[in-house]
Length: 153
Image 1: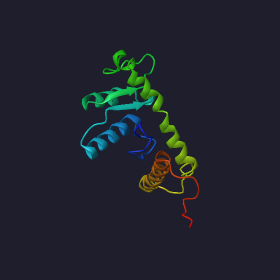
Image 2 (image 1 turned 180 degrees about the horizontal axis):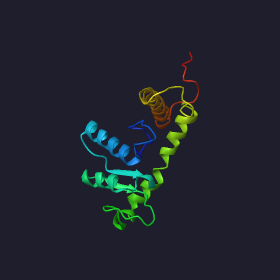
Image 3 (image 1 turned 45 degrees about the horizontal axis):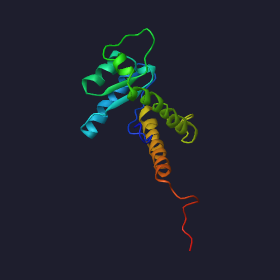
Image 4 (image 1 turned 90 degrees about the vertical axis):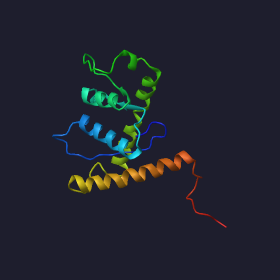
């Protein structure tokens, strides 16, 4: 998700076992870098991503890791210089918007109880649901007119 407008830009569906959040995060970031030919400026993430793998990948590609820290865990590349910045504080507030995307996909999009089997089919379904979410979000951002959108003469 990009923080400015709350639009979903990348998604990955994987099995719950054998794949960590860190691996999925680095794969999504690498895919985004390949698509846009440039790295995002920052990565806002929760404590599940406070690992050497994610922070190291971010530092290697010039991305500022705004990752929530786990108390007592030291990760090279994420210290007080990063966590005290105003940008870090802002990212930590805005990263909670991703939970709105997840909630919408589960409640409105029907991902809470998917009728699909297999990661490929669920991935396609998720892609379509996230596309719908982005269209609804863009309508709200553009200030779509009230009503049903039908023109009357």
